[in-house]
View 1 (tube, rainbow, N blue to C red):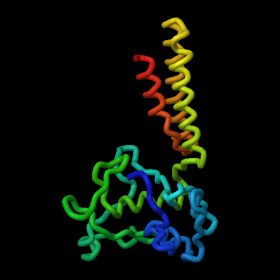
View 2: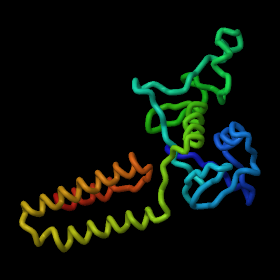
View 3: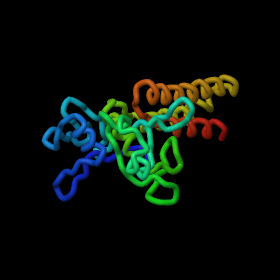
View 4: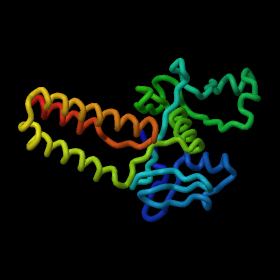
Length: 208
């Protein structure tokens, strides 16, 4: 799971997701403050959340430096029995749900093979409130197709005309550029452009 559908279209009626409604309530907003521009964004008050054509947001996922989860978790029984300081919950959004191993639904995410529902919602909610999400620009598919075409033309018409040594250097330079550009856009600009597959095509084509 890398994304969350923020708004579901059900026979012409639009329903916000749990994470989006929680974000709205935390900002003292309601459904009237949510607007949709399909294929571009979902607006929540002054927040503009970049989405794809299905109103999906590509969420960030968070970890502490030691690899642990950044969200505090408490057994419900301890809260019920008064064993947890209530100050822990002041001015916080509290999610109640099943998180025990072997019960409830879990999802594989980029940082966990089995993330429980409340934790997944916490990551999505944090992404919304912090405006910390990835986007797929409207021209991403066109740009990726252009990459495939450029590599195909290079392999068909340029590679075979160059000496082996120079061809290897050019292919290596293109490979590094593709991978570096994809990682830069992802890590610095929060833009997801798929460059790994074109890079694999370049490598395989050169070897062949």
